[in-house]
Figure 1: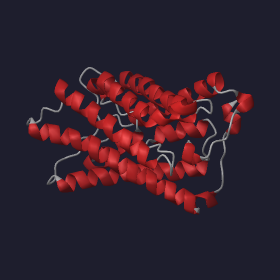
Figure 2 (figure 1 turned 135 degrees about the horizontal axis):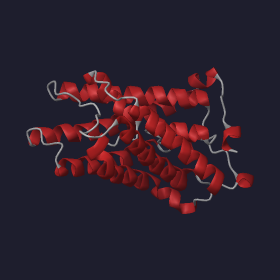
Figure 3 (figure 1 turned 45 degrees about the vertical axis):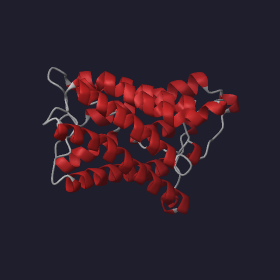
Amino acid sequence: MPLSRISVGSPAEASQPDALKAALAEFISMLIFVFAGEGSGMAFAKLTDGGSTTPAGLIAAAIAHAFALFVAVSVAANISGGHVNPAVTFGLFVGGHISLFKTIVYWIAQLLGSVVACLLLKFSTGGLETSAFSLSSGVSSWDALVFEIVMTFGLVYTVYATAVDPKRGDIGTIAPIAIGFIVGANILAGGAFDGASMNPAVSFGPAVVSWTWDSHWVYWLGPFVGAGIAALVYEIVFINQSTHEQLPTSEY
């Protein structure tokens, strides 16, 4: 069972050079991702006098996030594994691919990267607000929770299939593309309802900078539940337990 492979690790891991380099890589990748993704929405709103909620704005957001995530995952893949998402890190922790202490180090770096990106956006745009994720009219917190669970399940399942599975072969080379594509597609599906976060750090940065916390719990609970389910399903059903490999963090 995957849960039997969960590793707590030790506090000393947080100060090891490899762990610090991995954390820095996650911080930079998250900064790149959030700056481009959140910034694209701000730019579209400026060009259209607040029209970021139009269908064209949704498409622009999906493309920007897909492209930015492809790059963010690619540039960190050889250092930290390119998680760029606390939910992805959690899914890999559930599968036994990263220890608890390294998971916490990754989370701190990812959250800081998002906050710094939003602060830079606010400063460089002359004080424009980085809008926090929110629910659309008629969408309840529970509706949004289901959206976040399902969308994040698809994301983490894709991560496992293209980057984690030891039987993946050469398909692993397209992992960043597949991960970017599923996020872009999910934004097209869920963006009009709850913003389609799938990533607690992406939601956290704008919430901190704008100090808006309405229904913020949805953007944590949903992704973590979806990630955990995806990890368990893929590990139990598709990864052969007898040949399972404990992959280093730099390879997921």
